[in-house]
Length: 366
Image 1 (cartoon, rainbow, N blue to C red):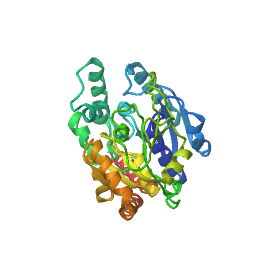
Image 2 (cartoon, rainbow, N blue to C red; image 1 turned 60 degrees about the vertical axis):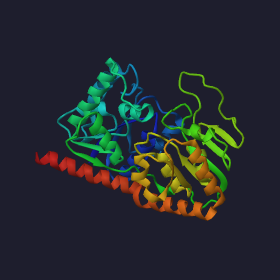
Image 3 (cartoon, rainbow, N blue to C red; image 1 turned 180 degrees about the vertical axis):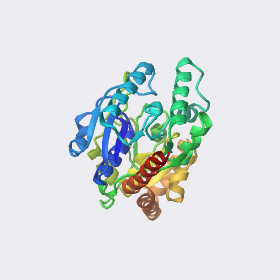
Image 4 (cartoon, helix red, strand yellow; image 1 turned 45 degrees about the horizontal axis):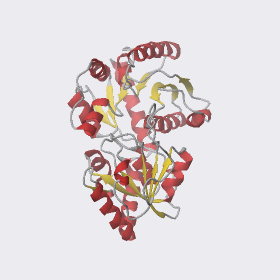
């Protein structure tokens, strides 16, 4: 089987793509990968260099959720059609909505990793104001979903959001994201600090909740403090006692932080899945999570929840877990077990491979 996949290099979709493509190629599935958004850094593309079988086509076309992206979306769609004509894949795996309309003669899977409207509602409490761009974006997403043979979401919450704000997919399924447990170290002795990973400027990540109160143990925040195109001040310096801003980290540096941290704070108010909490769980961290539906769906009783968006309750729970190491270990073990059972790259890839087979078989019969 030959799959043509699209991906972007500017967020967690790239990590998801690395896990899935690597596993698919190990299983003998041929993959052509087209990346968008920006050209990957050498660090981002290192895994590709280790896969000589992968047919990789990097581009820097703007993504559909970016402002003023209409022309790039049109041009990238034409480029994608030309690649399809060249390589003649059996199936399209599209990690952007806008390409759901391309090559109607081929089976198409569209994966919904996130979207602008549900993000806006989670952050602002209401849908975005109607503007020409928002109208174009909604129409683009709705068309892509409507033309897909299958729509995949990484959580039931995300699938429901599509139904609420766009359209009900003809066939929608949930496939949880996964990571390879071998990439992480759950056995390293833990240090007494709490970790959170997220962009300081991103209101949805809400890592600033950790900075609003003094915490019982040191806090480490990894992630850019500088929004692209804006100067929002210093990175890499603590702003409050017991708190350290690490700035952007390489995958290797992050794995070290996950391995060392005793507790991981999942503070997001918007999270269709959340790879960082999964990476923390596979590293043996206890999870303290914001009380939002996605985290409950994914982690159930294996995470310790603080009242939604409440920095005081977050600080209280951190204090409890910092003093009760047995309870902390209990949550860490529960999160690790949940991750091993539900969220491995192997399990994710098996579901996608079965879906590919099902969709291509149905297309052949039709």
